[in-house]
Amino acid sequence: MSEEIEVTEVGIVIRDLEIEDAELAAYVSTFEDPADGVRGLIDIAMKVQAHFTTDLETQNIRAAADDVIQRIEEAYEQLVEDLEEKAALLVDPKDGPVIKALNTATGDNLKKLLNPERDLSEVDLSPMARLRGLVNDDIESLRKEVGDTLEEIKKKLGIGASSRKTAADGVDFEGKVDLIVQNYATIYGDTAIAIGAITEGGPSKKGDTEVELNYSDTNNISCKIIWESKTDKTFKGSATSRSPKVIDDQVKKELNNAIETRKAKCAIMVLDSAGLDMDAQPEWREYEGNKLLIVVDPITPDENLIRLAYLWGRWKAKSSIGTNVVSVDFEGIKDAFDKIRMRLKDLSNIKRTNTTVVGLLTASSKDITGIQRDTKGMMEALAETINIELAEINDEIEEN
Image (cartoon, rainbow, N blue to C red):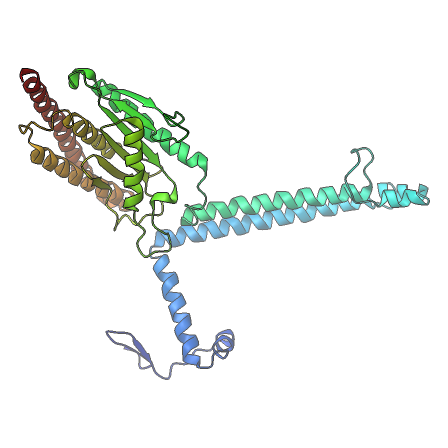
């Protein structure tokens, strides 16, 4: 252990440590207590170290920074070269347009020749206006180059992802979820209609996809499931909080309105995970027996989780037909859903591990295959169980 620095369980003790750095000394001297300055620098260093904990992150940041510096330098060098070339042509003492114009200019003509405004046709523009236009064009090109490069860095660092969301992002996410729901509806013979732009009973829009169950599965009784796909911040806690989570009351309010507006049996909200602390926020949450929230990645939504939600919606919608019959093993079905969700979570964790730890690919691929096989079998068994038991309910209702 160094004689100058002693490490304890709660911190470090620095004794007689000398650091030769004029800039450091100048900075620390600005504090009334120099120790406060040193502590502040250590605190800043710890925060920076906490944000960039892996070599991969450091490499990405360094690569992004080197890239933007190189692009800025290249754009600047090109700008200087172009300006020098164009300026030389304009002020050429023999053939330049400026000298030619000045040789023939008198009175007000000189003012027109020196007019920097671009309010005339390209033919009538003065040399100064042309020069101004060239400079503005080059500056705008440089600004765009720098802006695009900085956006690339932000994407690599994940900076400002939520603030860059636009209405188009929400439409794209809604389209992805709707396509998955449409595919599952085809499998079960249900009818799925994208109703994002359709209103009922007024100007309010509630619901993005309406699923009506196959009449042969519901004893010719209308059973609707409403799907909501959301990316906006209305349903999420503040990004400045310690662990941003879903605002449950907002979700329930939205789904209740959708159920009432569309005369549905149940409703499902698919929310994107951007801005949420998924270590603190469950990806699956049920409300009041007929409402469900699932949280998925905005770029690649988990199709397995959406399919499980689809099965949940069919179960809840069909259950509403015969709630007075006690022959359905609701606890058994709920237990099956819980087990499948746990297996899907294991699958998600393994896939996440694969993206960061290449060495585990071979071993984990076997687990993924097994989990996918188990999940598929469990979902098929669950779907069959729901159909069989609810068919028995319908038979009993008819007999009565």
